[in-house]
Image (cartoon, rainbow, N blue to C red; front, side):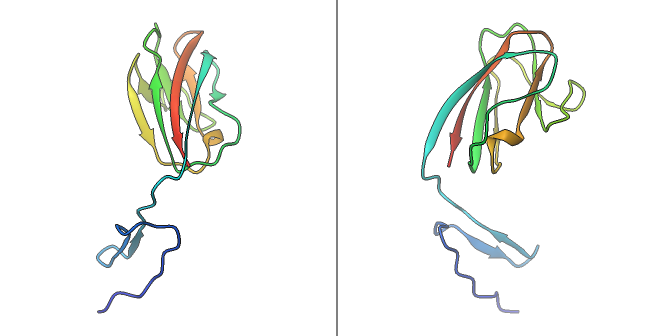
Length: 117
């Protein structure tokens, strides 16, 4: 069966149709980079940033954190979040920074992040 012809606007040459799983694989390069940090994270979930469109974010728990950071959606808890110990890094492909929340095992913890637009 021939693959459908698709024109991808804004995608790089690595984009393709995966006919085995009927998925469109889009390889889109970032056009911008920003960075920020969120400090004062404690035992209640907080959004890491106000509205900022992006395609990917790389988060790092601050090296001087004494506690653990948990990353997830608005209902994140220590039981449901992805764990970041001090200096751990994680990458999330996501459309907006305001969809990411953090909670910590103790008060005054922090994360640094770089986002790609």
